[in-house]
Length: 416
Image (cartoon, rainbow, N blue to C red; front, side, top):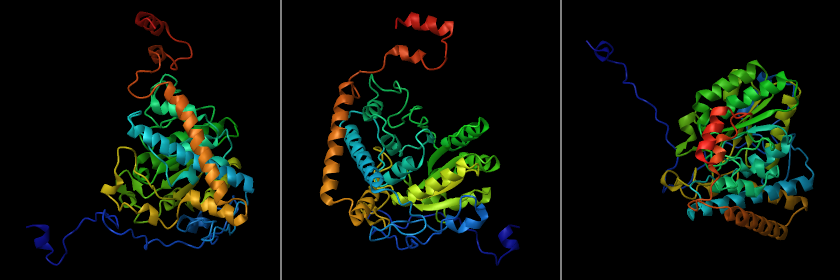
């Protein structure tokens, strides 16, 4: 006798499969989003107990209102000159992305990933951190290197994998690395940067150093084990780290609901680990800066790690291999209720009387020219298919501090 025969009145089980609200051809619809007013979220003291700020994991920290004014307790009151520099770095990041995207389409590199719509996250957080803090990024935080002044030519040479590639051809394009600029090597295996960042932060604390770690993953990666391992260690050992979840609504072609975004906020996942958890408007430069500065101050005061969900939208495809028009409305990015981060900071500066449309146009032209010059220099050292690649002898380097005899012999045998 089957179970249904034993319990004839019991309904059949059904499996819930999350579905995005809009498909290609549909009209974009974000009516389900409940956005609290800018300035409504309270700013607690850094030594607050995480259980006393649980609401901040479900609300949304916003500073810029619809008129471009900075309001509320989270307003960091940055000097206008800092804001102008931040805007220029966001512009430069966007122009850089556009140029490298075209280079891929021209066959000059194999692969590229843009950060369009997410520039405020990388740039504002770079401003809130110290230059020597170590960043464990995903592949959409190139704005950190740009804000920290890393040479654009070096970034482009890494994209082109040419003879001047600082990674010596050992990494995929966009997977940068620079110890001097506090930028840990990007890993294509998503999620690894979280436990690596926590381990690095624990080592920094163990040594009595003053540097903290900051890590980034996407919403989809929160469904992986690495996320949970990192949160546990960060909580238990009070690691001086900032753990960022960039919720840009899409993990490749899977919408955030597949990772649990329809059930609760991603920030709330930190509550079970006893981590203070903030949910922040990722397209608001001031809110991102303020939340990151708060978390950094906590970490430096030996109060432990903070989890931040940065609520944003991936305006472009996942990568040059992706066509977002196959899984979402083509104009959905324009309908995103939290707007464009570059435009929002621009309007804030204009509202302050510290910027104008004419100045913005000049800044954009300057960014285009700066990228053009850097690209010309980088491309001169080779692009895809030109066979201008790092010397074969580099395969024997950067592994041992002193090369062992058998590798020296192998290098001699190769004639390099």
